[in-house]
Image (cartoon, each protein chain N blue to C red):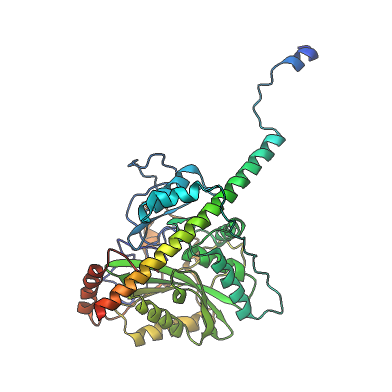
Length: 369
Length: 66
């Protein structure tokens, strides 16, 4: 899971209606404040910003993205170590212990799961999930693979191949891309992204998992710091049951669900130039009643199953936009396909009180997902 | 120019040879392997830190609740 956002992508005054959300650049898996620290900057105090780069935040804590491939080049590498030295209580001692070690154990490269026709779908999904777990969740503060969400699917599949080649820890967004890649071709399984925006202790957090649908059942693949916010078995009869399960899991970590975004089925053809549709249905959980949310999710699930939904990008390909470039007037118009639905906020006062109470309990620790 | 002169002429071309490229590739592979080992060693430490902080937070929440 990644970071908080400073600004919302959707207009807070928007009511039920269909309009195009503002696009965010892919590797931000969160909305970010303007300006950026580029991996190519040579001095840490360089105030200049390269266009298109964005700060990344994870629960208020900056995280960095490796944008220059492998082996990781000097600036990005040093930045990773500088960051962890600040974050870890043992600081530079911990860093030196690892960097100066004459011998470090070689972490085994997990075998890429190999699909056999005799395997059941649940067994295959389990194999994929186990593979991702073997890569491990990335706690270093530097994301090793850059994911631009607006990239064509074929480009993202190339990144998935790189993830397998380099075999390094991953985070939630990378896990979604990898999950898509490893389920490509299994045409009985439909895949679609499910994004969550939650609030904890005054900060917003973003997370994404890969929804899967097969033979009348829903489940998920994914990676998270929390075991119950990643993979879910293919046992949920409806999309709303699955989303409510996530909401309940979030509640265990005192995260309040603010928004849920459901995408469209991802094509199985890895060479498709079309980007992934990440947020076809956007539900404002803070304003919708549970029942309304259930109805919307059921409808979306039915529509997806009937395959009557079409991504707006299928009609007019989305060009990758970097931050700062304005949308053309045409694109600013509401897309008839996108749906934003708001849940009535039933107890705003309680929500307002909670963040203050939580933030006084700890030394700034945030339960990140 | 006479062929013998051409042979004595200092080779100014700095294009890497096949051998150089192979050495560079090997060095890159080694660097990647070392980086990977360091990343996983670091990830182990940071995962443990996160776990400790999470457990401490939960205990604090529990004691506050009591």
